[in-house]
Length: 117
Image 1 (cartoon, rainbow, N blue to C red):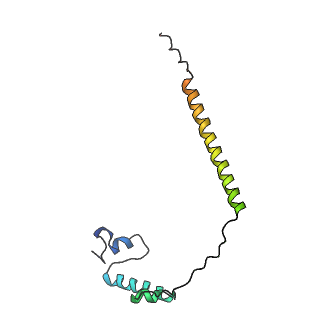
Image 2: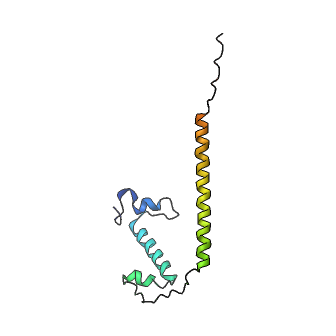
Image 3: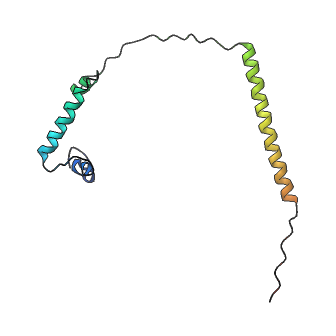
């Protein structure tokens, strides 16, 4: 196995479909070195800490909640809207049930069989 990957997913098998040609182990080492140097040239602030295994130090911050509570009018309007919506849903359900019952009660005539030849 290569680099702790399962046998069927070795690095060489993974790179077969890519543009990189890996034939010898030192080619893989050279490719890894190139990738690492390209990553370090990007100059992202956290890459150095990841590379050397040091944890990132997070600063403690204070959160402020300045969101006002909704007014009584807003709450009343929202409650009224929700009641209308639920009533509309209930009426649709009742209409569906009535249609199902009426269709079940209705006797549907069967087609007459064809005359034998």
